[in-house]
Length: 348
Image (cartoon, rainbow, N blue to C red):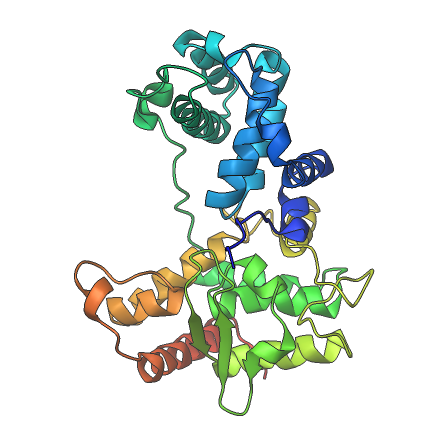
């Protein structure tokens, strides 16, 4: 029996990151047949060839094809959609990229370049063009090599206390209140918390079995610390009978939106609750960086901290180190829990 060609993407996750039009486009690409593919030739327009490319390449090779497709549909398709692929040259691409760079859209400019380079390389392989005009060009040259600056914001101890208690005065649900705190306690990304199911939490053995449901796609288990357990119990009580740790307020059979916590946090801060007490604005994603920095402050060994954050080990250890770090991770998470309880003045 012949293996079926991979042809899928996560619709629910795609709808959270892009438009409904992008999802519909991907669904149309999924239904393309072999006879339709036969229509591709040297005179194919960009709009036609990109659908073939999406079906035969992006849906096969990319874990999140909607991200690249969304950018192309918004920024490239209106400009070059009717242009023959054979007429696309470096100048064509650079005009697109430069316009985005001048508008301050560095992330989009790099993504557009990356997708178009892959697309034109694919067209060369398919025989639609003789040579890709981007073959010798490097992503590092886009915008003169300028890259979006990584965030460096780390919350101070005083800010951590204010962050913890600001949720007591916020007009939000119990689920949102404790989910926001859980992001800090667990050092997880917000979407990893908001996509968690009850079944992942082994409260008898104090382990969160997250599996591969994370950015890296690596299997991951995290010891549950006392402060994490407090948050989990609060969220489970608020979730009722839902299978989700943080169910959608509109439909308990579905998880909450992955931007729930970030939106609630911005709403609270826009009302001036912390304006006099916080020296610079912070975002929910800064909590994970703060947690990682705190682990170092507490003297947690680098390899243990990397395991907690689900980062890969460095060098040869990445290949050969298969040690189970769970006990050492548990000690580190307990120390972090004690730090938060004391710093944030938490009554358990």
